[in-house]
Image (cartoon, rainbow, N blue to C red; front, side, top):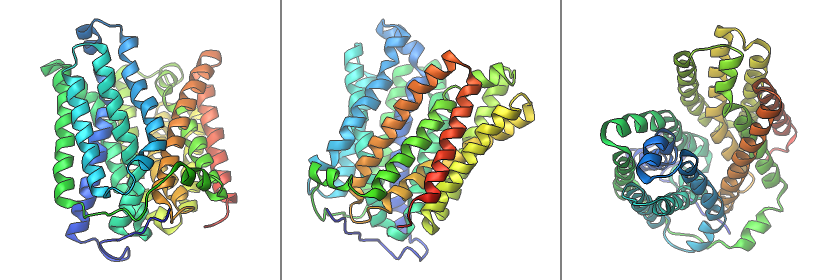
Length: 394
């Protein structure tokens, strides 16, 4: 179950041109995959109209991506066996291209759903392998910096995909927007062919490896941290618009401006988390939890003030940008000998957290108010801070 690393250079040296090109291919892949994942948010109305289905039914393409991805995360590293990891990454980009093209040319809802399911497999398998591949490119001592670069693709896609998808859909149609994501994966594929070094597998993985890894206390605590922090984030962030409408009384344009600030701050948080996670992953996680808890609690206390709302929504975005890097580094330090297997558990934990947060958040906002959602976010983020402080150092 050991993942031998073959870094292109020492983690303490400056990255060479080869390393930057390899990491650029990883950034491009994450950007392409996450852009495709978030694209339907801006396409639901024309997509539903064209296929003759309701918007609620069209929204299930997002559910298909997430649910198939959760299952794929557990089995992807088992199924790839001893295949060269560069070939696997190339195969995932080819799958993403095929899936996006199938969705773009789908003549009915079921073909669209099949295309989105294929995307879910590509997404989860990529994230399950990402930490191990990054470690072999930059060295285990620079995983934080490497994953921050991969995470930058996520931040950029989160900001760009829904809005650009809506614009392209209005201009050229929703199918053209879907086809564009296939071209993004094509660009990522080209960069993988040019930039990724050969990555022969050191060993295969099995479900037994997964269950054995689950016995490690560090893995259990790392997974719990993911579930607490990301469920807390989802509980509040999905319903931040109702909060800004009801409590801060912002107009639609002002809400868009506030959410734009959230996205830009997330990019900065992502960049800041990389080096901090390499120095001390536990401290990076503690700081992330503290900032998110502070931001959510401040919104509860002073969210009616426009300036305060803008400030603390942006602070929340900064913490959200830090979160994936800190959480991944924190989990991987408990399994430096099994980065691929721990990557599978990481993806499953994220999917569980996202689903739980969305369900709980919906119940809380319907039963109480959007203010209660923010308070619950603050509580769960504070629990993550406590967990980071008490967990033993690796």
